[in-house]
Length: 615
Image (cartoon, rainbow, N blue to C red; front, side):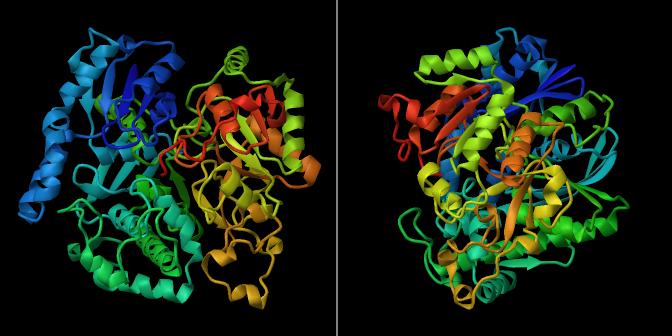
């Protein structure tokens, strides 16, 4: 049985194909259209998933959409009625799109699917609830026979936080919190207020938080908990709508919010970040962590189960995830790598397979059923060579051993290396298939990658990839973290203590102070977002790390996504070459093709600084 899952029409459209319970393929539409967070029908992603199976749409038994549009429309209308006449502006703005497309989304989907197969049978089209899709994406691929499933996001139809329990093939939703009380929307409000883009910049707030001054951040966090959020001991909460505008207007926060926190929202890319913004980022991070910890603790007491699965956009908050892991209210923790809406496509397919079709579930052996999350398209060596030649690239074709050796040599020489290998990752993180790599020992690598390669804010941290067998030698953890969703501290033996003068520094001034013997991946609070690399799921990347360790004694690499700011992660060899020629990466490896910047035709150089809309 083949089931195609689809998420679309909000943000991060995606498709996923499940065949007899096995995940065959999954991909986000943005990777093909080159439009960040593309929300359109995922036509290219559907094609890629079907191509991986050697199938067409008529070979699919069911197509499943990841939420229920009618219930969303109900929320819109009821919210307007509850807040009338204050909500009229947002109601009037949203209504044309709803009446034209979203209210009749089944017809819109049918039309899109008929363009792929003119004889598509509408009875094949199913719908799941948004949070069930998230929960299914977390439980069914997990390595657990049974698990508590916690989903946290902005909002689905009505639900913002949900708890489910999975056992075998059964997944039952147990408890819910409803709109407008949302941890995801609270975080998005501070994302908006500190001058970043909602549904895109939340991870920037998380990266900015460690620059906050501890006492000031704590005062702001106490203010949030006193005035804005009523947080209960069990992790449930209510938000004081006096301070928000998302129910009734076109912004996240309002004048009362600005008055409470000391000024108007920062204008994106117009005003410099100041210490207050960093303190506010730290404050909302504190509140988010405390909420998630309280939820995990209370669920651990409620359910006699050692396993917790998580999904939803808030589950991408790897700092909070790391704290849950360290405190261990549950013995085992597993987080869906595509935790946001893109992962809903996969969850919808799995929910239909095990729920609607009532098919059995086989618990994955090894890490999980996500195959390291390498679920996107791949390109054969002959195809790579043809595509690169057509693009005008000049390259050498090397043996497998030579590729590893030359790439490790370039990295050890402190060069930035584009690395495009095998199947593209599914989810927001580059995991060594579409990555830019660097030497973590370099004290200048973090600044170089941010300003000269990624063209993004200098404060943004970089993540380490580390051999799984060596993770505890560098980080205060000894757990699998293949999806870069857990933050851990660098071990004390590798840290560099700050001088008294350095300890007096505030905010961004801390950026240039080396914190460890791997400074390029050590954040200002000595933390790192860790990816453990496993031989079983990515043998070539594991080999590269091993070769780099042989040359340098260090089994760690800087790993950031292969893109510049505002650009989706690269997909094709052409994407990789364009990005290579548009920024200051010095070497590029696409399968067995090795490219050096100095060998390329200067006429092909691009200016990527302004090529994409800023995220």
